[in-house]
Length: 510
Image (tube, rainbow, N blue to C red; front, side, top):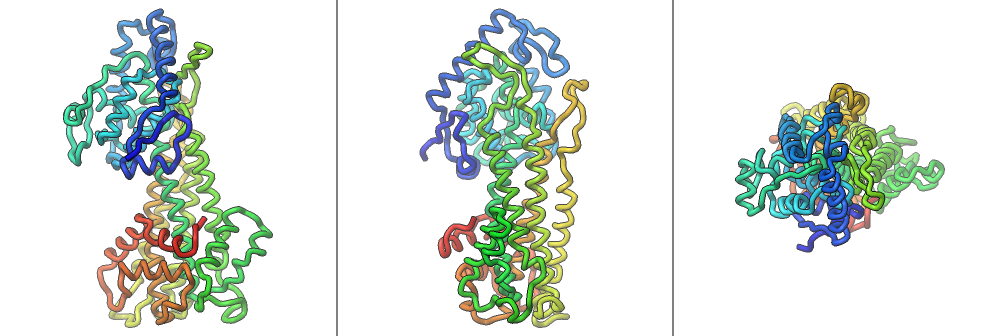
């Protein structure tokens, strides 16, 4: 498998997925290597001259006024890692850990952090050989970056902590030995360069945004299936309506719905069955489109961040200058992830309301709870309960983390972003929302079976989606254990089975 060339400037969201989920290897570009070595030479010079430079010859945070002599710099860096490894809670999944490592490597590849090439190549070797540090999810304030979780990553580099290797959890030193990777003796500035920054929140957010893009397409597909099951009115998606209010993804969502339902005999026109639909059908482009606009904004901010230097201080070789700044502050991402959480939550909100329209006979005209033998069978009754529960939980999780700053480091760090909390909340909301849409896919397919016995009545895109659902999950004739069906529907979402099949038939969904 060809290695991705890292230089700190050109990493894409697709690259993160390739490395995090498909284990694609990476390497440093030649230009990056030269920049890394040039910056390191300046660090070594400052140490030798014992000049007062934050994080190189001083303590950290409130202890920045404490001078560290050159014979103590290695102790300073090792103590930094050990003392800062204070994470708690469940550990991040392997794909998140790999994304964290990749983002830290790419940031250091910019050559403004002062790390030695040898130390960075150790982290690259760990990523390529599959040594995955155990990194707890909780403990980051999001400024000075993701200190606690990143310290757990670096523990393994120095032979401490724990790691997963070849599917087994073990002591960090043992994992490194088994993989044939030499441990690192951290030198001046290196511990700080490795743990001061935003790669944890960025990694979690990047994976969430990628999945949210896919999920927004699924939301269009599931809503199109529901539209057909309820004989919805397609006039509301006429391009003239949406060009009169030209929000980008409102327009593309309306286009998606018309393409998905093209040639359908189950949709209706204005006045045939009713003059207009309820908002959850008529306003799909306005609701889904607004969420997609927000997801697009989040992608833009993440792509900036994942090609940024976010540690402190930064070393500028041309000027031979070391500047202490605040690029570690996660506020740009904290606000973004709070926005993302709301956007994803809304996809669940409207999906659950469509599920209610499907199962409620007063709204659908279909058998109660989509079962032909109601009473002895409950059908989709509790599936709607589950969806409502997830939607309600999302409302709690969508509380903005970025407004909850709390001072730290004896008030030296008196405003923090809580960006990593915001990213984790968005990830949890995505999990819940995917389950709600999974239920809608099942309920819509069931409603279609009850509304029409002819699959050929469906549109060009929805026919493909319906068939993919029915390949894996049978129509519900009698009550059965429903969580298994929901899990199968989730697999169709997470494996991108439905989206890929639909796009092969009608072209790219935006």
